[in-house]
Length: 183
Ligand SMILES: C[S@@+](CC[C@H](N)C(=O)[O-])C[C@H]1O[C@@H](n2cnc3c(N)ncnc32)[C@H](O)[C@@H]1O
Image 1 (cartoon, helix red, strand yellow):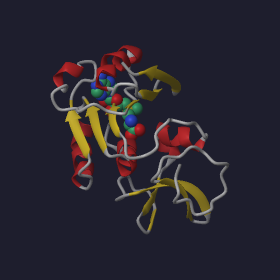
Image 2: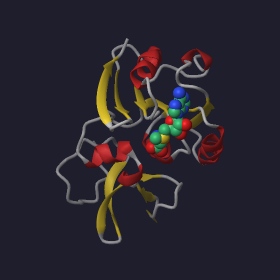
Image 3: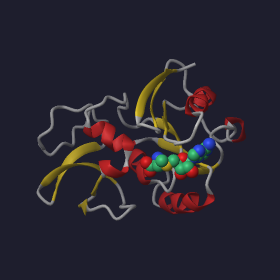
Image 4: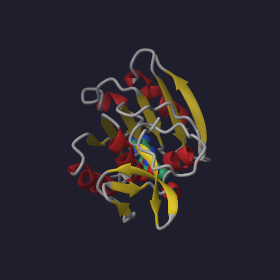
């Protein structure tokens, strides 16, 4: 749980260390510490995590427990231009961010320039064998590929989960939440 909370009014959502609520324009909003990425407002070293632009942010705002304490190694599938992956990198040890479209990956590379723990991979998440040599064992998988066969993608990428770890993965189509056990 975050110990950085500025006393904002929320009922103890299970936030990882490094995620908190801060005041932005008089409103208590979710925030992480890092350089702004998508034009979101910042306050000192904190930047707003806009839940309207991020399913993971929305899940935290809803008080869902993604079982991330902070400082994990994360495999992020479907990183797009890094809106959410950048926030996850703000509170994680390392984020391996897989995206198969070249255009958003270019932006993602720019985002990673300010985040040495964010590793963009221009790869197809349906083919984990093509990045298996780069990705170390991770504590969690976040998946937001928004395509058919998402469950198969999640299964194929289980191989990266550390023993006894679990992944809490928002699967995109209707923002369904699913938990998949580690290997
Ligand atoms: C909804 S967007 C992701 C938004 C992002 N997670 C965020 O919150 O900032 C889905 C992304 O998944 C990517 N994608 C879809 N299928 C993929 C696959 N098989 N491998 C890698 N990326 C994929 C798409 O190109 C798209 O950028």
